[in-house]
Length: 358
Image (tube, rainbow, N blue to C red):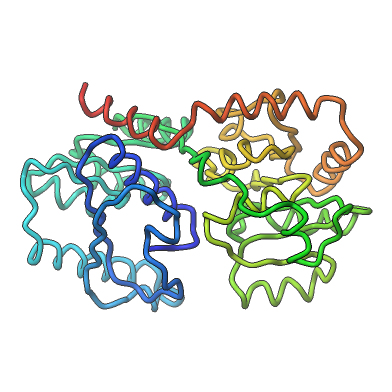
């Protein structure tokens, strides 16, 4: 922490939300080598103060390219060992974590634990059940993931992700942003913001870009070496790299259309995700095209967004529909603004606190 990936934002914003609600929060993270030099508070633009403690342990994640599971579990052992030996945590403290191994360890030691479960491996479900079956509180961010967990005899509370509307207000004008990135003011800009991971469907947009006329395709996200490869294959696409969350409002503001092309072939997209970018885009005042998936339908409908079926051809049709001035764009933007108002991080934190208090 901090990290350009969405889970880091979710962790930071939830810590901020609990703090604003009056709870004493300390964020404890393992040491990892990090190209981001800013603090957690600076990188995510946090306005509530809470301590962040980094536990010094060997960074075995460096070897995850070759031995991903082994590297993770070695680091988990180091992390739990360092916490156990070096931290005196009062037994009346509620431990909150996204890691099932941390949840299991502190439950075993007699603590009350809340585990946010954001992924589920069907092939290793038995192991997840073993780790989580005695954890006092389980929270998931989607109905599909909750159903998967409950099918294994566990109980969970569903709390979709949220958004910080204040943090997403643009600090630069559309014209300034376009000038900065050498994009004409009158160009129609179709934008994807997010990590370049297969299940997120960014390749669908890149393939669609080949058949889009008079449309500038922009990708915000990705690592430099990956972007370099993609730029060669898609020379007409603007790859802008990863940007801090506090700047996302600027980029949304320079777009004419925002795309969330999650790939239907992946269970993560179909059942498990609660896309943080969806909530952010709803606040952007820009039309949104999204893949028609249950995880998306849980949050929005045709009243707020435009859907496509997950294929590049369908995406091209939906983008052109918006570009050519669909009659209901203004109405959908108004509904999107109304919808996003109920999904603040503080509201999510308050709902989880109520769940704990029941």
